[in-house]
Amino acid sequence: MQQMVGCTMGPGWRHTIEENLGGIKGCTHLRELLFNMATVAYQTIPGYREHQSKLAGLPAPSAGQPPY
Image (cartoon, rainbow, N blue to C red; front, side, top):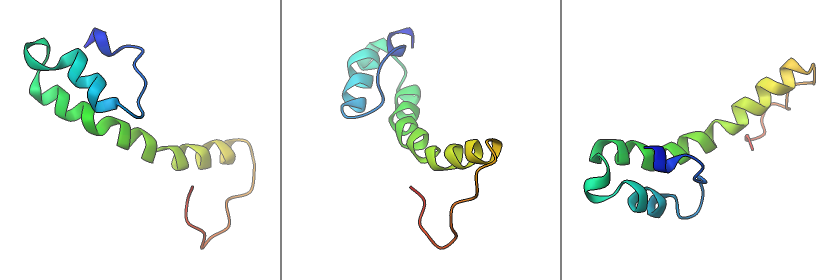
């Protein structure tokens, strides 16, 4: 897993995982979890931004509009 430190989640994420943890270098179960980690991380951004806005005292985004 140490090989994944510093790797960028984005285009080529699956390739990076396979390159660093593929074959006998890693565990199938961890690779499967890592494949989906980038998607989960990206999907948390709108909630995190809303939370930061609340902490800063900014108004809530207008209702009825889809999130970022």
